[in-house]
Length: 454
Image (cartoon, rainbow, N blue to C red; front, side):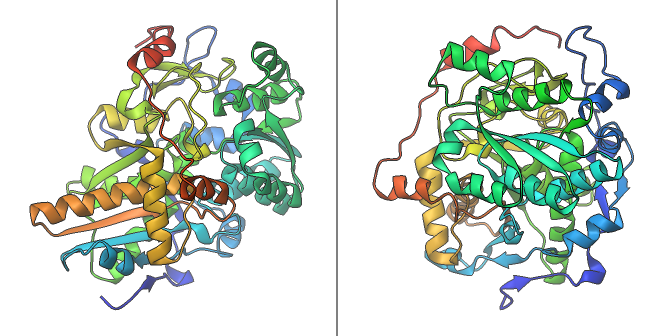
């Protein structure tokens, strides 16, 4: 195939998001109130989240229209290119029957897939008449995207950024500041949760769960504020399905279809965004595509976690979510893929994994960065540390097909670029980067304390 880059014309851009819940053979268990253990009500959720997002979270409709103001902003960078990784294939010495494509979400203004949901959430908040929003960010991609979207729709935004990433990635903070957001390293001294974490450990590098707790605490103390989330919940994954919807149409343009679809995995938005439209075809019996979620070995909620109700945050302020989890008290190692350092998975992806409808693999940090360097040298794009997990998984799939003498078409989601994550590459190239060993005893310590509600 000579075409390197595949782009849809504006007239063929998706006009609806896809809701996987409509087609799931087993629906996700409900979110529970942390006190009563009863299913949460819309009224309770509306106190934390924007009302229309709560409606989407609880919806069982298959298709949800993308509002025109959101479509207008999307057109700044969408459709994102689908590209054939021909130079990577050449470097791997793959036979003609093994093809690797990547969906390039790094071309958005914020440099990742995250604006797909950030723009939608900011729009709905503005439509509701809100002016103040809070959020968390791990590696800084979500915080950057939400800062951009908040500025576009006239919202004030406070971001709690996990401290290890705050220190590793100062230019992420500058991006957020440039778009007008206030950014605090989490744990911070601005909330009760943060102060308690610092009292317990003044050198605490932070977790996504802890940053979520700080953001939610601020909302609960301010009636005019709402919290916006970058992954995990279904309304976030819903917005990201524009990735997979475009990808399906782009593959049709070149007369190809994937045998394997891969996405890196933190809370589920990137993986669900690329995979769920293809899963719809599997569930309908029209296709049979393998779907693979690639997570870090040091935070293996899918491959080594337990399916149980757990809090989405460290302090236990959020509703209980039925999820594959390492326990909300789990503290992952300070890897550079900050967006993947989350203890649990969303309820939809967790149920789908429980039902055996996709696969999960765990990948070491050094191996993933090595794959990122190879991709940069061959395809010219320096990928985000999170995305390197998907690249490594794609290479493994290609190697496996080669060894088996099989043809295979592989598609992975390049969820973001690494131009502001170069410290990770500096550590790798200098030989300072290391893998982290997570023992069964460490996992058992935080999983064993969960209340067994399932």
